[in-house]
Length: 554
Image 1 (cartoon, rainbow, N blue to C red):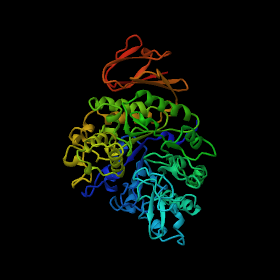
Image 2 (tube, rainbow, N blue to C red):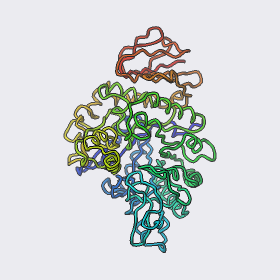
Image 3 (cartoon, rainbow, N blue to C red):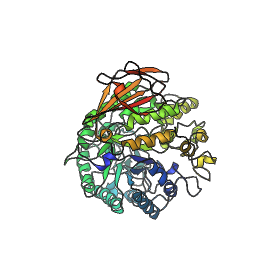
Image 4 (cartoon, rainbow, N blue to C red):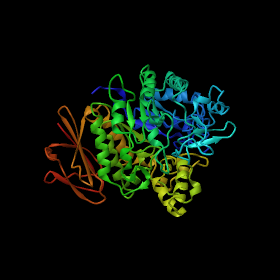
């Protein structure tokens, strides 16, 4: 397996608005990040990924970019970012930007020019079509906001927006647009940025003719842009830029097939991306998305994680994560708030010790949980409000019933301010926070976790530093055992003459976990666990709730 620096790193993911506020305006900013660089470094991570920090009207909190070559004034200035970049590099941490090029904000100057009509040189930067009589060009539905077409009467045309109305899709079939994207990449790479996370990058090529889609309430037409006809060649163009630098790129591909991921990420001259963000393992408690809930299924989680581990090994590389800005908090989903510390540690070991590059999302390392919001008006996110309309209109949900679902499924659970201390506003800001702070901040915060040697925070540090420079954990082959077990997840990592056996209980009550055939626990060294005491009987152990044990064999 080819050794690469991006395979050996761990990455901390920052959603700046909710990370730390340095000026008291209630909004996280680059000054707040700067003040916490030593804390981030103390985790043992090797890089920081920023969700979008460009100027934006905040229709989708940064994923509607108004200027690709500047910084959101709410967060700071371009000079502030350059200083932060230098300070991160001084601490041997790389910095990665979000590259959002499927769409822009409708307040981007390209789009303002585009709206002036077909004679404007920027008109074809976006996807414009005439309607069919008094109806839109096709039946596509957006992912965030009703129909996927918005009418502009001044030019008697519709523009396509796969997300919010204020996020018009770029026309990537226009070679001038692709040149713009490459220039944007070079702008940040020349500044010293170390790579990109490419947002919904698999949506950038649409089927020719934009045919009608299968009529479904949300994302109707997705089969015509999920993996469009020119996706591969456009990614190849962007890869040519990446190859000019010592950088890396991870692509987000909602509903992307494993076959496509292997094709895109396979080592060799045709590699398009270094890794893909898979969503499969995040559906263990939902049907395709968190908003269609089902009871948590460990078998689903295991099968999806295992298929990616097995398919990508010796071919491409995995992006390992359990939390980011798009998903609710994992302890509230796959773990247990009752056994928050125990399940938080177990989940951390379960995914970080697999083959791939681990990403840790802000607050995950202290075990932050979902929030309870009592009023629909207190939500902030366009996707939550879109789901509110859908569930009210299609399924006749009451406000009370929708609130219960939103508190479980909304991605806003991950966007509450980080808890730094038990002080007012969790130490996040001296002003009025832009979003509600979870009421449990007095007991769940960084300051408290630093003082507790048994905290989730210290466990993350132990795991990240155990992985660092460890060929067995980084490059070892993965194999799952006892696949039909509904309460335990057991897998091994093997490299040369070493083996690592990871045994995880997902049960809230004691249960017996037996070692797989070929393993003698008495001959292994217990190197990681989340409980004191580790008795073994008959090559098995009585696992406590959410216990994890990691044995090393030579």
